[in-house]
Length: 241
Image (cartoon, rainbow, N blue to C red; front, side):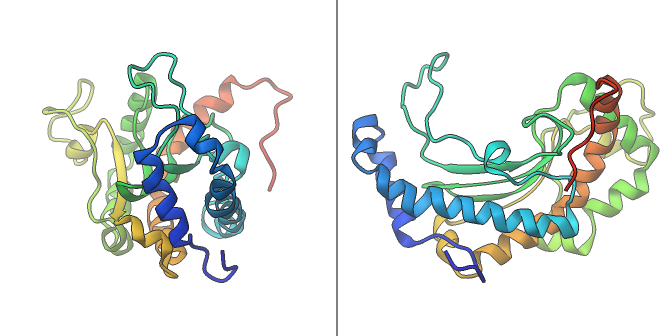
């Protein structure tokens, strides 16, 4: 993986496609060295590079192996699908003051189905969704400016996500942010063919999307970080970069 333009080799793509056809622990055991060399080690290098880049536009987000990387082994205990391995490689970049799968985050994954890169909030809890809607209702112009900015539209298009048919209770039906208040998910993303991860422009694409979506992630996390901080013990100190 080049320091100037991180990307993955065609061998990584071939490995993931073969893994989808041979989702078996024994098959993987005999080829784990390929996985380590072509996927795991390049992912670690990519996270290190993202950690540096985030300092300039998303210093509140974490890019470390422990917090960001997902294991390749699936938890099949409560799943009807007993396939032991994940066929997509993924990393998430959460807020340092929130749990790994709590709040809004940046995220990317790639596998036989292609590349997904973007961020936002996929499955908020009821209290978190209410807090975010209240936050949007109090700053409708600010929120709209984030999701209609030229950079956001250029990199990911429109804000996506499931939504209600009607404005939720507690908000005026003619509220300026009525359409956004209906949303149950808040996502900005781009999808590309799997071969995109082997392109020398891969890291530039990744950064372009992340820079465009990071302001949305920051806005969505603002009320959640405040609520989380109120629940912390007095001796807790936020992570310092």
